[in-house]
Image 1 (cartoon, one colour):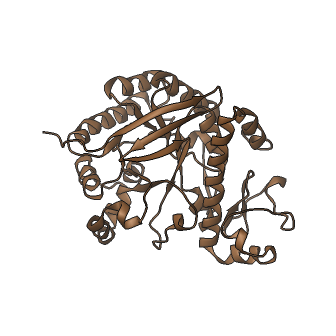
Image 2 (tube, rainbow, N blue to C red; image 1 turned 120 degrees about the vertical axis):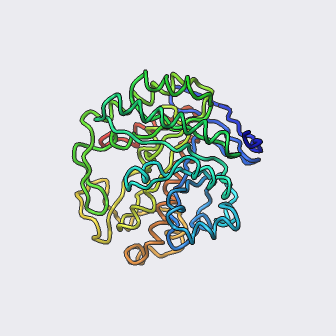
Image 3 (tube, rainbow, N blue to C red; image 1 turned 180 degrees about the horizontal axis):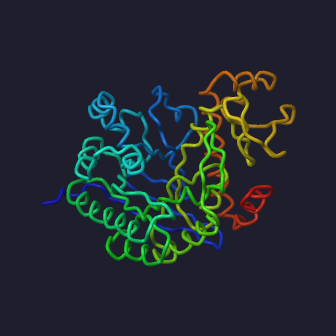
Length: 363
């Protein structure tokens, strides 16, 4: 017998245009406006950055907590929202990517137990990410794995579940939608498509992308949105930088998530509003175009760090403090989401996105 559902989740589109849409997501008596950003929280040093920048959606990782038993026990004593002292919407990822990457034997039953113990607002179904280079048999096996886990978890947790589409063909997408009756969907396995043939990643690593990946990405998102229909809520995993979020929102995605605000800060980057990241510590070496340089005399930013620090001291603060960089980057990302919503409401988003993409690989 399944657990009685205690969560009431709904989504309604309130404004739609050829470029983006506005919606209201309601879950556990909470309400957020979309498009929205779920900021990934890495549980490093327990610094709650939302005390400095107002945000209303977080993404945390069940797999990470399960690997840190002492931390998991601390969080279990209070529940995830009380532990984080956060009153917005909390989505918990199963950690399918990490489980696959590191080879940990964790199953859907264990993930459900964590969801029930920690009580996030939304729980991601345990999935198995794929890559465009895999065979169709492997991709369909991954789809079957997600579908099987959806029904197992649906019967064993009260948390609102988010099933995830992994695959790039109409047949795969239709299989997911036919087998899982949900109006709430996530899409994964898209990160390889956004990368170039040889992409320089912070930390000095090089990741090989997929030839023609951006075209496949756009076609995949458009196809998923068409198959799901306008009423369904759609979240895209892993493509939520201060620039790529606009591509997703423009294509009709309702929410994205991002770890880049903290990841970039860790390697010495700060985000320039409306431009790109700039490394100011030497921790990562990369070539930057002309629009990714800082003229401190003309520099303007109203984040908590920049607005409370004299310009002559900002560079030194950012070089020394990873937390200062993180708070600044978080603010820039949150501001871009606000701007997206404003421009969609004014039916001006296509022009806004075009200006944001000028001088970038997406133009």
